[in-house]
Image (cartoon, rainbow, N blue to C red; front, side, top):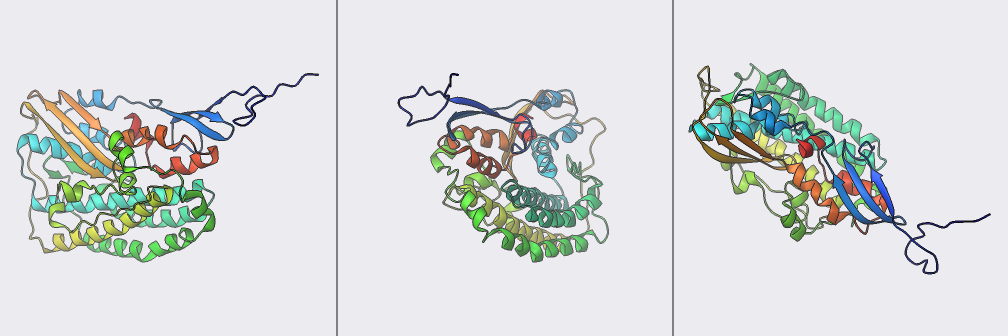
Length: 381
């Protein structure tokens, strides 16, 4: 009887050793969707990591080229399915800029309000699901309670639960329903009042702290090299937020507080996300106050039956919940874009895993991956 020893790892000098190739995904409970990670392992420690994407690529950018400027909104709001309203904004802002169109003031403030509510919905999903991946079941139920509170007012105004389709070139689909602002103000107050319930469940949990502190540290230098943005970048001390630094919509008139941390680890990323919820709720209240003070007026611009954009090009970027979304629009004066290139937040953010994962244990891979807060549709487009 013979015995073969394989993959003993570093330190077994007298024995032949070899690295093990491990595929996480493309269907795996810890990958948030159809993402594949090809890991090279030395024992339980990760040597190299390669994110392999494209398993659910839907060709959105090519579909943009054969849809008119009203139809592309329905395609754009789906790549990050947790941030549909934010996805729509980049498209309509780019088109309006090319047209030289002035959007009614009521639409500007209503868009800002809805963008912040959508940001809270996105963050609450990850605030509930991330502890779940580390073994804490209870927080997700609390997070979904708050999501349902806000989903009710978002669904009331748009008719859609996830894909709102409420933005239009020139403003919004229709006027805000009567009494909707008071119901929204109450929903925001309810969520703010109950947020400590989630925080108390997690903040002092010894297991959660042990699994996240000092794990998956991302340096500011690496962030700049890979173009990482959003909460992940700010958790490493990169103080950059388009809402403050290159304002669009009504953000130039709002006191946007940019939440940052210095540690750059999994715990810091979670804390930034949690604090950003509080900031967004404050901004939502400020938008509601301003909308209440505005005189009655239009919520959109009248458009021709066939909308053609002048020849030229522009780039519009927005601070979406997961980071910077950019839309590069090229027009040849037709009713469809000649080219509409999408720069999605998750695509850049996920590439940095090849730098973060090596040196960590396989058990820490789940904690790091979950703390990157990505949506696979936002990667594959």
